[in-house]
Amino acid sequence: MLKDANELAIEIVDKQFETKNKFYKFYGESEFNKYIEDTEYSLSYLFEAIEASSPELFEDYISWERIFLVNLGMPEELLKERLEVMEDVIIRNLSPERSSLAVKYIEDSIDHLTEPSKYVSFVNEDQPLVKLLEQYIDLLLKGDRHSAGKMVIEAVDNGISVKDIYLNVFQSSLYEIGRLWQENKITVAQEHYFTAATQLIMSQLYPYISRTKKTGKVLVATSVSKELHEIGVRMVADFFEMDGWKTIYLGANTPGDGVIESITTNHADLLLISATISSNIGEVVRLIRNVRSCSQCGEPKIIVGGYPFGVDKELWKKVGADGQAENAENAVLLANSIVSEGYDSF
Image 1: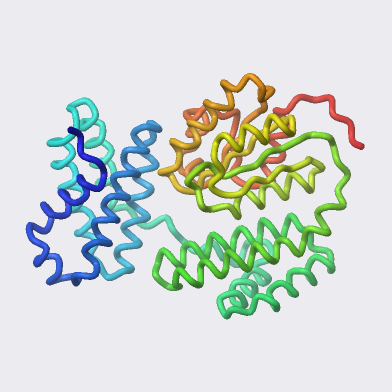
Image 2: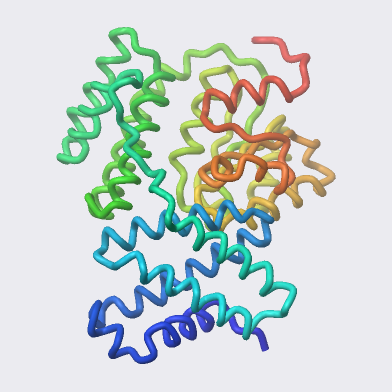
């Protein structure tokens, strides 16, 4: 009987450290279960990358994990050693056909461990609105949501467009906060507060968004089932609203049946699917297949977005979408180019 990811993870960690005491000596008993959990995550990313025919996804995850573990005080050699043990365990537990592909993905990732980190600051002096961005990050990290919101509203009232605020303040700040958390420079609580505060401040800009003249085009925007990140797809939905689309925003972790019901009820012209975590790509594939096979859905165009689609530029084709966009602005441009003409403003 094939072992599940948890059983494989336990076997990998047991083999790597021989005994729990060897692990405890270096990292403490409290970290042991976390290390098993992290190993299980690595396996899930590996299997998802194989299913998506995307070695880039696993290589990117291992690069991310290297930085994360180092900033927790663990040596880089620990990750390389674990990957080597993972190869051996997979060879002994998976079929030859599946294990050979998994080993190739693992070895490619080991080769990339020596490359310099690509995770650099998302705040630099050359980007638009950098001073506003820096102040926004500083205020929210201090827990001053009211001052941050007031500053953003004043900027819009003084002529800065809502789109520029979304792209150059909200989006850039969220990327930077993710990087700071990865490097163990802020806590999970701070990251969650920052995201929640940004969502609230975004809602304060809705009176500026709702003034747009409508085109008649309809968008359903969602994160896939199991995907808990929602702020990115919400930002993209707001861009469509600003472009005159009627937007049906479903939020995070939406069951596939609910997405299909929304498409049919609202006669959607476009479905926008977001996935932030690579291990959720399988959910994207399943949702697209279900929409394509739905006789009552009206054949909406499908655009995908989120971090994995930036890692593997061809991933959108592999999952069966009609296109992908790197940001909200490009998503609207793409949508308007692929959705049928014939809509009149009203």
